[in-house]
Image (cartoon, rainbow, N blue to C red; front, side, top):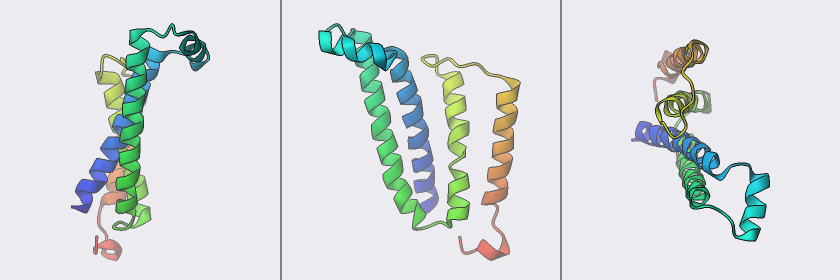
Length: 132
């Protein structure tokens, strides 16, 4: 159960980032959005962007609440590095979700592979932390 909650926190955090990014692509620069809001000239696309941003904030809030539970059930030296799995999910989401459409590069992918290796090293049980 604790591993499922760890995964929930990581996934919600990653979704929060992706939703906020998707929303801000529709909202545009805040320096231009707020005057448009004051004058009543915000487009439908921008309002949908605001909804994406709000969904991202909700996901982030859920991730934080679940994370508080996770901290009570994992060693911090194990739990915190596992959050880096979120980097992998955000990269994949940003590349695969057409709404964001970021580029796939060898350098970014190599960095993700290194993160995965680090997570595997941290998550591998040792005699000292077999109680996990």
